[in-house]
Amino acid sequence: MEKKVRVRFAPSPTGPQHIGGIRTALYNYLFAKQQKGTFILRIEDTDQTRYVPGSEEYLKKALHWCGIQPDEGVDEGGPHAPYRQSERKDMYKQYAQQLIDAGHAYYSFDTEEELNEMREKLKEARVAQPQYNSITRMSMKNSLTLSEQEVKAKIDAGEPYVIRLKVPRKDEVRLNDMVRGWIMVQSSTLDDKVLMKSDGMPTYHLANVVDDHLMEITHVIRGEEWLPSAPLHVLLYQFFGWEASMPQFAHLPLLLKPDGNGKLSKRDSLKHGFPVFPMEWVDEENNKLPGFREEGYLPEAFINFLAFLGWNPGTEQELFTKEELVKTFSIANINKAGARFDIHKAKWYNQQYLRLKSDEELADMLLPVLERAGVKSSREKAVQVSGLMKERVTFPAEIWENAKFFYEAPQRYDEKIVNKKWTEEAAIVLQAFANALKEQKVTLTADEVKAVLEEVLNALDVKMGKVMQALRLAVTGEGSGPDLMPTIEVLGRDETASRIQYALQKLGDQIKT
Image 1: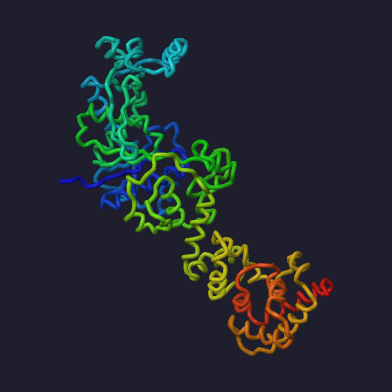
Image 2: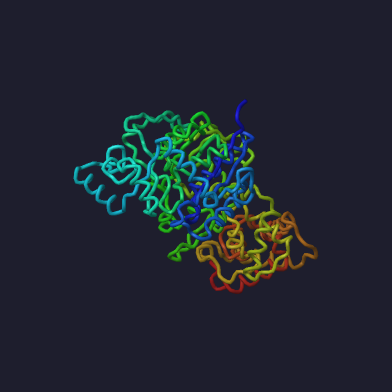
């Protein structure tokens, strides 16, 4: 019987979650849902020196905003609780002891000074990568070089120690990665990683392997930065006798800077002003790091954009709902090469999803913005404005920024349009049109507005193209914008006539003959 798919996202609470981490969570989530499996959120907080307050809450809020809901985890609970490693601390000791008893790990009593001295000697000997390994460990202070009595005496005396993995000297470690294929590493290139620190806390290497085994994880989908550690984890599975149930590994490609030169980082956000975090974060230096949410990105657009940073469906389709992503996602279609971050593509996605929103949904976004700006608006008008503007904006906030003329009569006018299109002929037509609007006794639709204008133009024997930009200028102050007739419908006949009259007065001495 095939095992039910169980995957986990296991971040450390060391600051805001970079979008690379959110992408890892997304891929795990999509794979789990597609396979009708379980998606687990586990917090790996064994390194308390790097703990940053607020990080865990930030992460959970970010996942919630993205619509990535764990099935088990720190808040959801589950059969393998607790899901926070610091709360599982005492459990790891028995597994470290199991490795020591089997001869796969050992106590190490070396001081920091002794470790530095060892590294300096190796550097002087021109060793490329100074390591605590199968060769150097035999000249260090550990349970492999000390007698059993000496080791016991040191432990009884409370002398600080760590527990290290005893890496074989000449083994070949093999790993069939789902993204990269077979990876073979000579154990002589690996160092004896610390498994338990002197404070009694396990390192990532021990804790993640033990937890993945106990939580019955079937697939480990994580970032490329963990690829060098994978052979060590394979060895741990072998040493524990868990190789038969070892999860399959998939190491995801790096997210690269826009120019492809190096890994995308927080500094890129500060330097170029685009977000690399799902939500805003204020760092220890009081830098406000922008977030996709605060910049106005829709969560569904963000998720679609993120999915394509390293994965491709193999078709021309680019817009996917979350449900479609679940149906289509495949680890086989994840790229090996790093994925370039393109903020322009992110904006394109947001445009597409904004246009798919109903006018009513956009009005719900616009009304709070208007309220903060001290502008009163009926819901009906907000719906109309949203419908006219959504094809012309990238972010919801831009509806207000680019549509202020719907709520505020223009006081200034585009000089280029004034100089080119504000003619005596246009002024005559505009005055006649304003008068015709004042004579109307009912609310006019866009088609009715156009009919009134055409009647005026026919009477004066003037073509529509001669006056349209001047009319737009008088009504909005700009030379371009949404369809003019529907715009006038929203403004109403009286407001439109008033604006035309004001423009004629203010720009009267600038009329070109």
